[in-house]
Image (tube, rainbow, N blue to C red):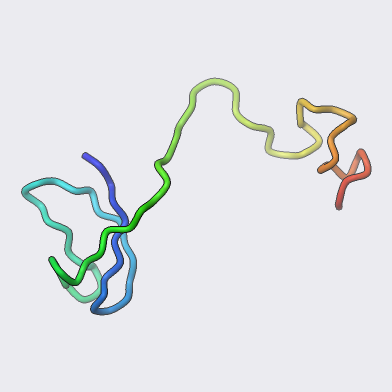
Length: 76
């Protein structure tokens, strides 16, 4: 079951909704349904297993040539 992002044209709020055929989306702010709700295009979330990306630039596998790390002359 996909999760879609919606914008309510009635109250201008945005929200996500797990879409099921028996459960149409409803705006949590004003209760609007149907024609008031506009499905948005969004980027799918990707999850991976195993090694994660470095959390600090200094841990970058690039090493001394890393231009984003203050240790090697990058911005601080």
